[in-house]
Image (cartoon, rainbow, N blue to C red; front, top):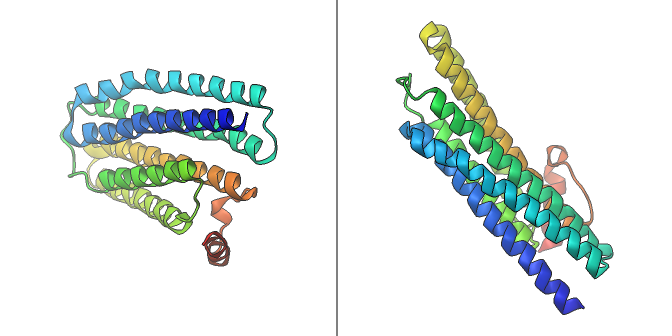
Length: 231
């Protein structure tokens, strides 16, 4: 029975890795499409959302079947039940990548008011955060807690910077209002993607420790205590 459960858990983790890979590619392609004004690439991101939606339903069914047939208790049940949250957060990240891609189509005929720097940087940080969170789930390892917190803070700071910069361009020339508003929206999408990736890591933290902590409430002392306990 235990061998069968471990095999099913491995299948779930493999499928989540696949779902995450599709989602990560959608994210990177959506911002690449924005940077390069590639409408075809943006449309392909939008089309890929169906793959993520289908994978979400498939994974929910797999997890439900394992819970029903394996009689999971204690840590096993916590692990399996928490998987639903990870799947949901991945699906929402894909939705936000679609939102970015729709904005690309909205700006297809517009000359950008500035070269995009902070938005691609936000995307890189969000991808890194997501990769760390998913790897933490696969390995059930929360030792990258400090890096996760720092990445989220850096993403938040860039979002504020984008907001301020776009407002300055919009106030300087009313012709920039439309695209400035779009770039502000894109910054907010990427910030929310960072939040969803952090949510995944919070879920892993719960799986590993049995404690749920809102990372917004973390103190340096708490982080240090957690890392000492894990080493």
